[in-house]
Structures are given as C-alpha cells and as structure tokens.
Image 1 (tube, rainbow, N blue to C red):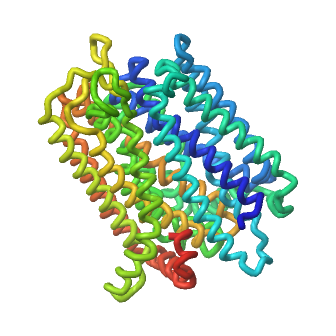
Image 2: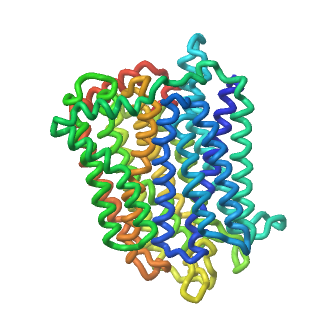
Image 3: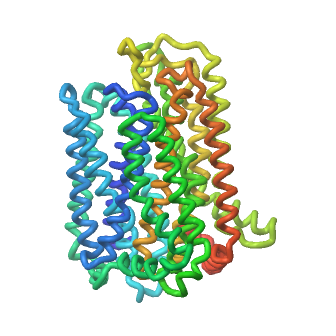
Length: 554
C-alpha cells in the first residue's frame, strides 16, 4: 500500500498537471477570441511552455541551496495557486483582461511550475525509507505511479476542462462562462494541492528537510571558470551565457511578429545548443570531478530533446489548429456541442498509458531477442523521433483530405476570427481523425522522454541530480519551444487564420525535415566515448530490473 506522504505527493502532481494542461490547452483559443492571429497565438503558447521550463533552473537552484527543497516547493506551489486565480479573474465574461491573463499565466503559473517540476518527484521519492527491505522496488513503483499521474491530470484537463471552455456544463454553466468555470476549477485544485502539501508536513521524513550548506551552482561556475583557458572552456561559456539570450529573444519574438527578430532568435538558439554540444561532448578539459560527470550528459539531452521536442510541440499548435477547422461537433446542426481542438491531446495521454507496458514488456524484449543485444536509449530516441515524424506525415495526409471536403455553414468555436468577426467555418471531415497523429506522438513520448530523464538520473552524482533534472526539463521543452516560436512566425504564410487559404501540409513536411536533421545531430553526439559510457551505465542498471520495475525507468 502507498504511504500517506507518497500519496500526497502523487495527488499534488495530479493537481499541478491538471492546471498546467488546462491553461496550455485553452490559451490559443482564448487569445484568438481576443483578436490574436493563428501565428501569434501559436507563438504565445510556445512562449508559455518555454517560460514554464526556464523557471525550473530557479527551482533547482533553490532546492540545492540553503533554502531547501521543502521550502522551495511550498513557496512556489502557493505562487502557482495565486497565478491560477489571477488568470481566472482575467477571463471573467465581460471583463476580459489580456494583460492580467499574461501576468497570471506567463508570470505566476510559469514561475510556480519551476518550483514543482524538478523537485516534487525527488521529494516524493525521499519519503521512502531506504532502510526498508523493498526500498528500491518501492521507489521504482513511485516513479511509475508518478509518471502515470502526469497523464491522468492531462486526461482530465484535455478530456473535460478544455471542452468546458467552449460548451460550458449543460444547463448549469453557460458557454460564455466556460473559461471562467474551467480556470476556477483548476485554481481550486491547485489551492487544494498547496494545502495538502503544507498539511502533510508532520508526515514527511526528517531527511526531506535537509539543506545544502552551499549551492552547487557555485561549484559549476568555479569549475567552468578554471577551464576558461581551454578553447572548449570559452565555447562552453558562450553556450551557457546564451541561454538567457534565448529566453529574451523568444519573448521579444512572441511580442513582435518581425521576421528579423524571429530569424535572430532561431540563430541564437542554434548557436547556444551547438556550443553546449561541442564543448561538452568530451569534458576531459574539465578534469574528473562531479561537475564534469554531470555535464557529460548535456549534449545527449540537448540533441535528443531538440530532435523530438520540436515535433512534439506540433500538438499544441498545428494539430490543434487543424482539428479546430474540422467537424468537431457532437451530433449535428448549428447548435450542437463542439469539442475544443486541444481535446485530442487525450489521445497522446492514452498512448502513454497504453503503450508504456506494451513497449516495455513486449516490444523491447522482442527487439532485444531479434538483435541479440540490449535496446539502448539511443535506439529508443531514434524510434521515438520516427513515431513523431510519422505523426507529421499522417497529419499532412489528413490536411490534404480536409481541404478537399466542402466547407460547412457552421462556425468552429475554437478557430480564429475572420475579418467580419465570425469564426472560421469547419470542413466536412470528422475532427476525431486527428486522434491518429496525437497517438503517434504519444508513442514517441514513451520512448524518448522517460529514457532521457532516467539517463540524467543515472549519469549525475547525487549532489547535482536536482539541478541536472532541471536542465533535462529545460532541454526537453525550453530549446524546442524557443525554436517552435520563431518557426511559427516563419511559417505564418502557410498558416493563415483560415487554413483553406494556406498550406499547413508544407509545415508538416518542414517539421519532418527538422526531425531528421535532429537525428543526424544526435548520431554525432551519441558516437562519443562519453555517451557510450552513459549508455553502458543505463543498460547495466536496466538489466538489474525485473519486468515490473523496469516500467518506471524506461
């Protein structure tokens, strides 16, 4: 049976993900109702993801300092809850306020996410007594339930709340109050999470409240400073210093739809990532220490995350736009209820829940018997990116079919506004077909994201695991979002408000080419001796797990 403190952490993660995906899944439609263009709303959605994961650095820094992990979670969970209420107030019917909405979501919610994501799973694992005879198994089970909880929260958000924003709740909540109700529901869930975390204080193990005497960030800076005289040291310094520039340029690109700003943002992001990959592909110039061991995984995290993440982000932008211009009605007629395009993210969640045991317990063992050796993390990443590229191809095929169908005399409530103030009309093709590309991306997610997180856990020393998990989260969402935002503006001519006048399929072909280029880059990174050592460590640990425990790590 799950211990009470562990159960509290799992429930807190459920509430946090429910809130996050409610905002992420409805931002685009709400902003479009306020007059934002297709490309502009896509850029803001990408920016929200970027800001949420950039803040993970601050959360990891606080946790690994004298402030401590418990206090970091407590303070930022409260900030998160306040941000939810601020956003809910901003969407009140008749009193909508875009500036207040941005303060709540882009500021408080995004910042609060950073206090939760890199710390709460570690804090939950800390509640398991290492002296218990089955401590290792219990820890593995915790991570499995924790990972599934993320997708359960997303299921509630995408399966119910995002549709409430469009349709309301029966006769109780009219459609015009849908956003306010959904955001208030999410706000109350997050407030409950904060109360549960604080209320369980006396139940947490004493070790959970331990603090470091000094921040590990200082040791990273000192170590990199000592390597400044080496050419790779200078390249590394440029790469790390460019990360704030990436964030600033992405914000600027989202606020101003200028081609020059978008291209500069893309170039800065690519320069930053390449500097980090080249400088840390071989860290012998830093000597053998905990910092160099931690930095060994940076190239793998950056290359793997970028290859998959850019394709993954199409779910919150282009897939949603496409679904919104298909027939999303439940029933028929002009007054029939409609499904928000982001609803189909539940196919991604279901793919994670269904495919995790199938891939871990059936596909991977079968592949190992076929090739006669263990399936490595690199193999999983190639397969995961392949699934995501296939999803783009399927979406492109569906777009060709959609554009060939007649346009119905029915407005799509989640599509952008036309010049006359009406929503773009939907095409005579069921939006449920979009479940296919969403599901394929979910299959890729099972193969890529948990594998990269586990590789980071195995490769990092215990003293730097929180900070490196923060970098893993940023690499998984920050770099891809920084590239997705300018890509959205670069491809704006293909994605006008009415997709019938554009070429969305060309965007999917472009993203597929980017994914293939990412695989080439990952091949270069994974061929290094350092990456081979990380793979060997990961494989060795996997071989020690039985089939049940393995699910939590792969």
